[in-house]
Amino acid sequence: MLDKARLFKNFEEQRDLMEDKIQSGIEANRKGYARLNFVDGQGSPVSGVKVTIKQLTHDFKFGCNLFKYKCFPTAEENALYEEKFAKLFNLAVAPFYWGPFEPEEGKMRFEKDSVFIDRRPAPEAVLEFCRKHNLKVKGHPLFWPSIMPQWLPDDYAELKPYLTRRLERIAERYDGAIQSFDCVNEVTSIQLRDREPDRSKTYQGYTALGGDYPQWAFKQADRFFADSELNINETGASWAVFNKELSPYFMLIERLLNLGCRVDRIGLQYHVFRRPDDIYDIVDSFYNPVHLYKVMDCYGKFQRPLSVSEITIPGYEDNGEEIQAETVKNLYRIWFSQRDADEIVYWNLGDNCAAVGDGWAEDQFQGGLLKNDFSEKLSYQVLDELINRQWRTNLEYESAGQFLYFKGFYGEYEVTAGRGEKEVTRKIHLSKQGYDEFQIQI
Image 1 (cartoon, helix red, strand yellow):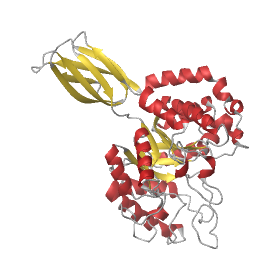
Image 2 (cartoon, rainbow, N blue to C red; image 1 turned 60 degrees about the horizontal axis):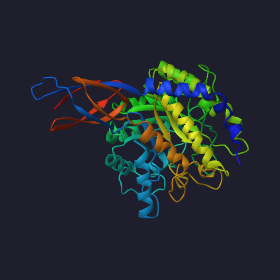
Image 3 (cartoon, rainbow, N blue to C red; image 1 turned 60 degrees about the vertical axis):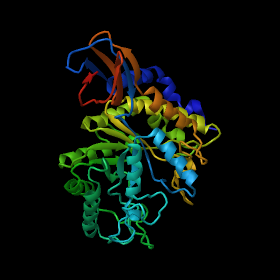
Image 4 (spheres, rainbow, N blue to C red; image 1 turned 30 degrees about the vertical axis):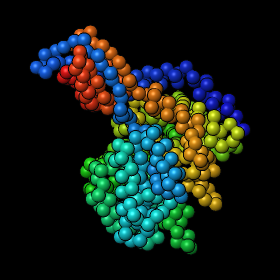
């Protein structure tokens, strides 16, 4: 049984401060005003219009990896996975891990009918699902010195042409079609040592790379990806190993920008890969509202959008589901309210979606939002309430004058306006960077 009071001490001690920052931050950063002007067929202003305003989409990205798409043994299970995913998220992460993406040299698994690999659906399958449900897509990752193909050469210099070819071929198909890619992954936290006798290229076995590889990978990717954003992505060390501008991750980003690299978004992973006996060691970093805001405000100095890019919150122990749900509620509200955040990505939709193994593996943390039978955990229901109800704008008005203002969450809206027997429906997009005045002709 987890000690809830001990785990949530900072949330409770800072409750008033946290709630104030959440509410004021959401109003200031996630919502805006729109003016609707009503005119007749000749363009003359009219009044007395009845208006229904219904939000259809969020500009803010709520995501999850789609790694288990079409990977379950039955059609019923696959249908449940798709239904639960599309109900909650507007962003899907497509796997581009080099090893399973190109298991044989030159044979990249682009197509839907590519050889099956669990948790590694082909990009075309992911894109088909996302087009069907109007979801954005993020590719993960373009380069990560782990999960590498066995056929790659040992020497780092000899590896470079293969990476260049990989980037070029992926960009030929997906530049712009996939909205963003994690360009490099886990640079400051990766642990590399000499190759093991079995020559496996994993964290434990891959030969250390040259110190220039982050900037080299960004510069190479920038040659080919003109329309997709290029992100940097780092582990939870970005929250825990934090010393303001002297943090390793901060200094890495600063160096990349000084070298002219195009870093479009900054990813801050939030995997709580801790067992019950040591989870309390991170209470003052991972479960601390003041600290979380300090970290995001610090990385916001780069004037790049922030992504809370990979989230695992454990659900183990007798009270684990309840604690997971309350943690999700606290954290998503904090992240959603912060000025520079534009994306929150939960990692595994269900407990049956996690990576499994005999040693260390994700499944031991029971960090999914769904149970193994696809029934909803409390955490899933919390996100459904926040994303699909509390953070949606649905209004009804009758305009006294020839226009009206409304304040709503940024996103796409359906506006229905009626006057007498005439009624029209129009879609508008209320955007932080776009137009905020719209003409409705009745």
